[in-house]
Length: 626
Image (cartoon, rainbow, N blue to C red; front, side, top):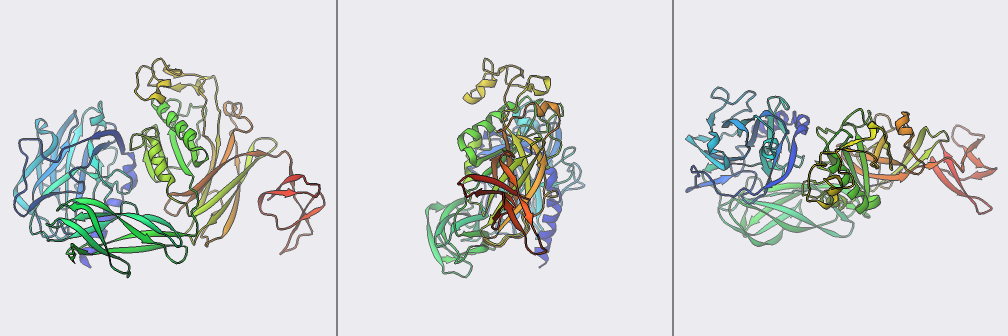
């Protein structure tokens, strides 16, 4: 119990700074760092030793950083209670640092995260590394091996960037693989003054390893899931990627497992999993008998037919059993502005998504980079953007709106689109005759019982353009020759190959936003229940925007927000005007009932929002019930 409480305290301490870490960005440049040390100090593992970390040897790495000068500190946490760290000694540390303008490099081990520059006073071990020794896989040996206590240790390195003039200086921390709760802790002297974890933000884990020494089990396999949520239709099965980490000394050819109290099943690996390595195996998981969201526990019971010796043989995942799959529309909220010289890249990325995915793409361009922007919107959800262009997909993944993390934002969008939604949503927006405000009504249906859901509304405009300075887009690509075909319109010789672009037509521009504190909450929904929520948003009043808006180019967006702040589903529909829409009169209302009529004809059970009524003469009338 004491060990468990210690781990909780560690998580609480490092998670407290999560929000500050949102200033960290990931580079699009990939580093293929080799597995073996490159310097003359390369250390090979001996008997009862192995190099170990949260990132595997063959993993492609990328850089992360704050894109400015600062002193960085980064670390991982060793629990002292798992297969690889319990009762082990640390003999050496291996890390990579390929930044060009770097000084003051120190590698260190501490029993608590240092709040000042690591030194002999606040760490258990610290060693300076000369600039000439930097590069890929720098191996630094300890003079005396260090025991890992049951309370765990932090292993990290610190350095100062003196000029963020190259990609390697802007994003100097090398990361790779999957996110791990203890895999990436960061602090800087200025931008991120408190230690923060980047777990769950898609950065992966810190590329750092320790040379462990001790007795390792013969057969020890730890399961985990890269994706926590999995979806399956009732009566069917779904394939799930199960990640296996071999913490034993023997190669693994097959495993046996149970899910909850179910029957033990055995699966063979396509190729043997080497000792202290990680790989994936696909397993089949059956749907629950009823539509629901349930937490499952998978336990690896046997390894090569013998008992699994790991101290961490189990992992949990969420299985969402659905009566039917509902299409998910994917939201991409982009941080942009006319004074942002690299934002044309984001504009091209958003147009590419719009053209390729049609209505499945719910784009919202948030012009908040500069207040001189004609499309500047002062009030919008705080999403943690720190640089432009940036975007966030379904409020889950922060990435580049053109390159994504994979090199093409369309890949990330496609992956998000494959995840079924658990709520269906539709929206109607009606603009008033004065064209000053839009009444929106969303209908939301949940497939099964939900936790508290919230709703946000956005009005977005297409085809916006102007000829004044407020509409002029800065363009840093004007003097470049770019390789990407779709970016060439902004490069030297392209259609918009000027440093200041006049006449560009902007789409998906956020015009107005109503947050969950403004809109009636959806609350908890039971399976199959539909709720309707209405709200009125005012259109921009500034002449620059009013003159650019045209009928048929304004859309209403409804965002359904999960309890954890991510987007459950969304929809975007063109706003209709009030022409031909009749008001509904109320005849003799009572405390419990109301009768509604149009042109003398009584309506049966009209719904709040927009109703379409077929009259006796065959004509169709639009009716709004408020």
